[in-house]
Length: 235
Image 1 (tube, rainbow, N blue to C red):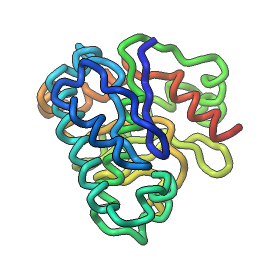
Image 2: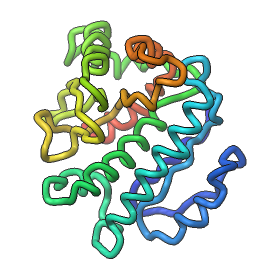
Image 3: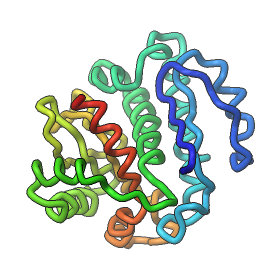
Image 4: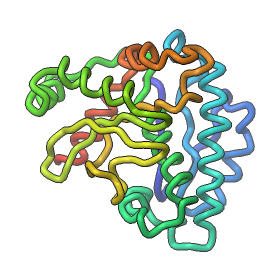
């Protein structure tokens, strides 16, 4: 299995992988921060083809995600946020600036997104499938709800599978770079799977065919990671 080491809070930065080319300087840069670091992608830019093309991956990761990270770090500079877990920052986002909300959300959301994708097929375990069936009735019903949330999100945003405070799974969508952890959303919970439906996530390959992008998403979901997050929440 490919290594996916996404560090969102306190930790150290591993040596940058050779595939990082344009980001070779990022590892040295992020070591300076005691808390939040820019995550390694964990697979090559072309690893998810034909579902997500290499150029889209490279631009999305090195330009969009990196910009969210850089701008969040600028907004957090000189504050306790540099040492505060992203989950806590998201949970009190109503008290933060728009810069923290937009860029912190973009940094956090994308880190979950990359980690939820895999170039190697990973099937859902029977245990997690049972949890899906318990809360949605069937996997088909879950996938229909999730796909609908992604396809009908007006403009830019995300579709989510999350766990609420009662341990129940639910599907929702959020605009822009908001997420279910934020105290400003209607349906609050802890996200375990997210799908980016900003146009920059798919437009080079799919143009305006968001629905096709959403349908192909199921071919590259890392269900092992999604289940790992789920178990860490419900205990």
